[in-house]
Length: 233
Image (cartoon, rainbow, N blue to C red; front, top):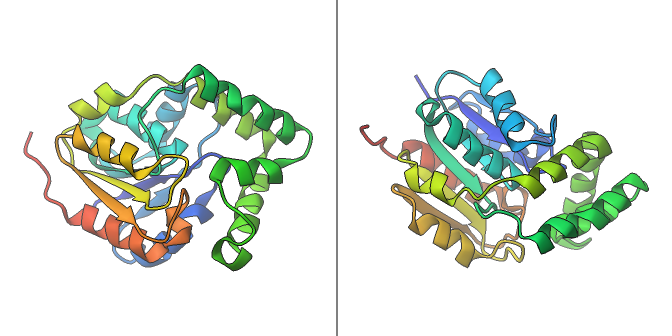
């Protein structure tokens, strides 16, 4: 029986972030998208996923969803068959980066979520012939300000996850856009290097939102991830 896959989207994103992958992989696997943001604590977000997820599953997280995935790997490693980390980082937010969220919260509370989206994902009106930014803005409107505040507070407070990944023994696929300016390829490579069973997939013609900017390449990377052999414990 195929392993079930749980997908965790980035902040201000819903299931549509993985829309192309859901369309391509749903015939092969049971796929569940679990949006995050019900709490301002990373531990609570991880526990909420574990309460709803299958007993054993493959877990893929994008952006902040990747940080939640790492928290889950820390709390319940025996439940994960494999892990995929997309456009994310295990590093704790620096004081400067944590404070950089505050103007975004002010803008969001003032009804200017569109400005937040453009800055948060480093996208422009030209991306995907003008189709990407409106989709991201629509997802942000769907998530709403209250959940965005929770997501930001959890991101600001989360602990460093490097030690978690060093202990991870399941197959880990690190996926990043070749043109990601927010978390460059080099940082994803460093993360991959200290994994026991890690591989890096660099997605061409994509920035910080590779699932939508080059969806077929991300789907191919996830297919490869699901075929990698499991390590005996």
